[in-house]
Amino acid sequence: MCNDLERIGRKPPSGKTARAARRLRRNTDHFVRDEDGSLSILSIFTVLMVIAVGGLGVDFMIAEYKRTNMQNTLDRAVLAAADLEQVLDPSVVVVDYFDKMNMSDTLTNVDADTGLNYKDVTGTAESNDPANFTSLVGLDSIKTSSLSRAIERIANVEISLVLDISGSMASNNKMANLQTAANTFIDTVLEDDNEDLISISLVPYSEHVNAGPDLAQHFNVNWRHGYSHCLEIDANQFDSTELDMNRYYEQAQHFQWNYAGWNARDDTICPRYSYERIRPLTQDGNALKWQIGQFQPRAGTSIFLGMKWATALLSPGHRPLVNEMISDGDVSGTFSGRPANWNDEETLKTIVLMTDGQHDRSYRLQDWAYDSSSEVSHWNSYNLWYYLQRNVNRYYHSSFYWQKYNADMGDQLLDRICDAAKAKGIVIWSIGFEVEDHGADVMQQCASSPAHFYRVEGIEIENAFYSIARAINQLRLVQ
Image 1 (cartoon, helix red, strand yellow):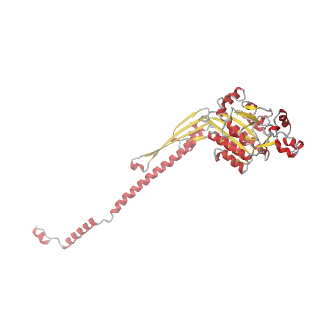
Image 2 (cartoon, helix red, strand yellow):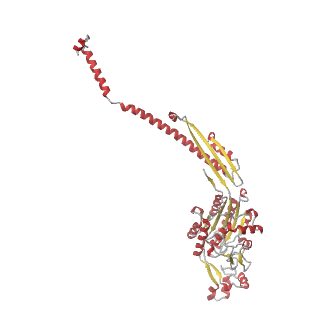
Image 3 (cartoon, one colour):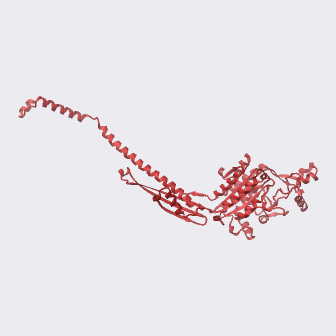
């Protein structure tokens, strides 16, 4: 190298300078070849990206939290505003909810549509939250919105209220508790705002159902007496909600089976007193409560007969019958056109069926012992067992009567008529009042669902009737 430098006229470097040059060249080559530390740059970029993404998540999480609060507040507000019992303007109610949550700046619109039997409230809200990290990707704010709509509608409601007034209701203050509960039900469903919208048909039942002369006269009946007005209904009619208007019915015999040692005739197979009759399609709460207040526990239990009449009074096939009763002045003209068609979207048909027991046997007199007017009159004057024990040899007692129903048959007929009602869209609520397990099973089977069945004791029956009454005014969140 020195020779080369000498040839070009330059002096070679001194020893110290040469060594420094060689070290510089080695360090430069080492730096070029060394890859240590290259990951540090990637790590820096990765950390920055994680921070950015995490920041975006925080921004969106905060926005979603605010949106959830906004939606929940809006839901509660429109539900309260749509309550038909709410007297304040819907907008005032919704605004008040948002004010109390310090969210008044998010409420954008309240729209309300009200009518005689409904209230429809829709609310919208919007939040535009400034961004902390999303601005890194060009979003200066995050916009969220909420929509909620609530409707409470009391459509036309047709109710059959079916109450057990059998002899077992005499124990444990059950009749008094039922009367209080039924009155609460009537007061709740027949509020002033519901005028002309709700009809109640009261169907008291024990061992039979007394249709009453005003209703029964519209059927083809082989009338034998005027003591009571029960119709014998064949088993083949329990697969239909209607009662066949083209057939002839036998009038139920008027006699008393129950015996307590004297010539009692209050507990006849067919209830005999006027307050034990069906009261069809009425909105007269005072009349209903007066009648219920007169109930006395009597005779046996035929739940299936009460249910059969309950479904018939909701069946559109009996609209001509109701129109005839309107013409006779026995039903208010307000209810012309009822029972409504099955597919009428503006009409709710529902049955409230209550019992404190279960089906039992039911007997009838043999035809030969009830085939003349004098015999009909005779059994109105004498309790069956009072007469037999005093006038007939005990070996011949069983020849006077026969068993028409037993408990199993009653359960089967009830199951059939309940299925027929549910198939037509009738909502069935059932109440087992201090019942045994079998009775509870039968009543739950009849109800529209397990949630429609109440098993209650004592004064709990009032809560059951109240809950059912409130359910008739259903409030539902539809969006």
